[in-house]
Image (cartoon, rainbow, N blue to C red):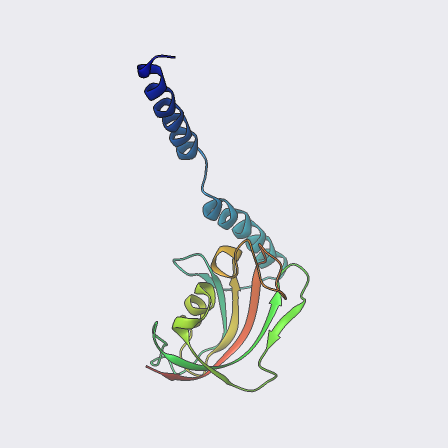
Length: 159
């Protein structure tokens, strides 16, 4: 093989891989689309009346809060919550009915995004597609690609 072919073949292989990659939907987007379809079916089956966030999480406000004190990205909040798997209702975490303090910047993206839709004193549900939760890998108590449901009461916000 001459020098030109030894240079040309790897370049052509790289171009083919780039073209293939550009034609494939990214894993994140593909999973988000699949999860959104499942969530939409769940919403319809359970007659939920809520909204989608810009990011793609679904939330339902059951009780409005004060309407003025909303958490920000770096807020410290106190939340009473129960986290379950949307697929089968398995509870994976709970505050056991007591407010738990934490910094919003240290939680999964979907939980943060959802909580930011509630004002202090608000109560409701946040449904999080897996890419905004624990993704493909999951945790010891949450299987990969799990859609999460959190029933929450936002008891305190410190901005």
